[in-house]
Image 1 (cartoon, rainbow, N blue to C red):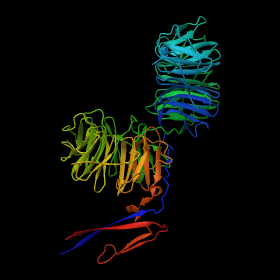
Image 2 (image 1 turned 120 degrees about the vertical axis):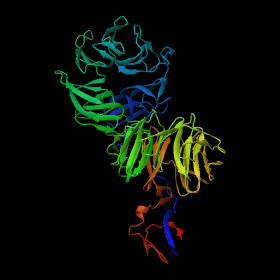
Image 3 (image 1 turned 120 degrees about the horizontal axis):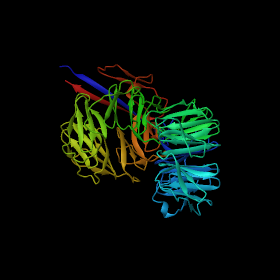
Image 4 (image 1 turned 30 degrees about the vertical axis):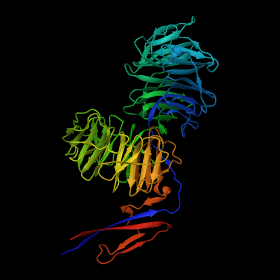
Length: 630
């Protein structure tokens, strides 16, 4: 009879002092966002975004801060500035004015005739502030105390631009160009079959950016001639010194001399994205996009820098070959240095709204709508697998025991041959959205908006297991060696008996939903919708809220990679902290065999020697696990 002893050793260091958490914002290269308006004064840049409000840079885009104090919501539709004054339009909330560069905001009351229409354009012209809404244009000469309406003759819903040309007002609309006459009446002037997105002028030359290209008028807008990009959407046009610069819907910028039209494509090429707005100041050009963030050029578009605006939504992070892959609503990013620098890895995609990433050995899969993409070189290149999934939208993508699982509202698609063939199962999942899947004891656990569903036959049939759950809106399920945990809309629950019943874990100060859970050993991190991050080091018996230096408390995902805990936020940033900052660190397998640690003999016969050299004055445990095979 032969006895074989298998030995596993885990070393867990417990830092004796109470270290303070040190969350660090890591956004270098992580750029994106939908920015619909820009205003510049010297080195100060204001940008307006949907969902993220107003961001301001006082150093030409090197650093940014949010200036949303006092705003009713953060859905910005228009922005303009002059000296210390900043004026913004907010979706269905009217106009706000700041007289101290955006530090504080004052809500301006306007006649109810203008609402609930959104503010589409704001302009400082002479000593007046003009605004545009559907069918309406008005102005104030006293910072909003009194308003004058000048909308007689307007019969168009969308007003895109407003300028003063040769002492007269002109408006670009969905039905061409309108001119404000001396008898206070808007007259429809020209370009009747064009949507006029932007207007600029210099001397007698008058330019219009439209859905049918660029037009030039030399007689105050009466007659126009196309000077390029016929039947193309050109959303913005600006003049910079003796040149014209335009942004088009293909994500390109073009430049030409004013005197001799000769369009040259500049080195800003963003696939599947449009240039929404251009702004110029001195020799600087700022371009805002509808998904890829803000770009800046100081050499007439020859070179561009993406200037950091951390407002992406982080969906999930995975560790692949010592690199971190991050999926966001504006693309995929990779970091090979624990988040110090992020690089976009979007080659081969025709869309950028990423959600799940799944890893199968050296193969990485990601899902966009109904398309599965594969990379076998750490995310550098992606190939569309051209798999017919028979669905248009999926919530999650999981690889469990070599099976592929795609979940959608009311069902699961299952593949046992790496996506070549799929079977759909909807048994027990009617009208149910699955948020994530885990595998435990030959069971699949699914977090759904109807509670926790369990399958004992690899996803073919499902059964709800909600006894003890006080809230069935389950956001995430996760496990350790002894328990399965469920994060819900109103708390954290656990089960030790395969969900036959659930028990609530009390977490003081928790007021919002739990979006993410990460566990190792007895240590639990939870990320919440608006309360930041909580930590328990004793399997949920006690908790600490660990938000020091965490600027965005809307946590979307958590990941433990190398010696760090990473936090991905909603419409914000990525943060990291060393595990040692919270009072512990884990020595992983790939670090056991350095010069500070040795086992002899190996394999062991009758005895074993363990030598550990450490310069840290820490407590530690050595856990020995024996398995006897007879």
